[in-house]
Length: 95
Image (tube, rainbow, N blue to C red; front, top):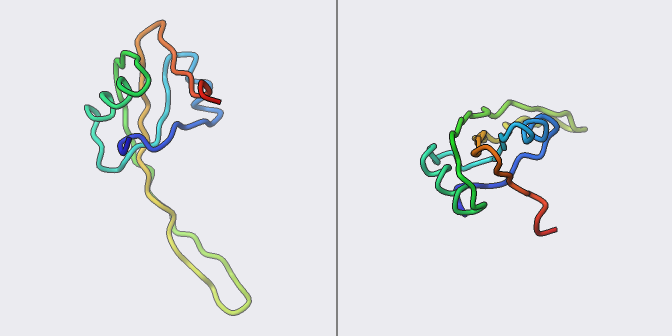
């Protein structure tokens, strides 16, 4: 799907999985309603709430032999999805 890019598999998001909260990287243009529908369709769970945040890209620079190269990292949007009690999303199902 074009709305959900990938699940977030960090230490913090893995610890929140026990509370029924799962993190996803989503498209910048996606809204909460679209994210909720996409998660329910993809994983077959009941979504109670969706919280979103934008992680703004940072300016980075590095030195090479001839010059200093600078640029920006990408801006991403994250969604923290809370599923209904008793339901689980298994990211490792197809492996």
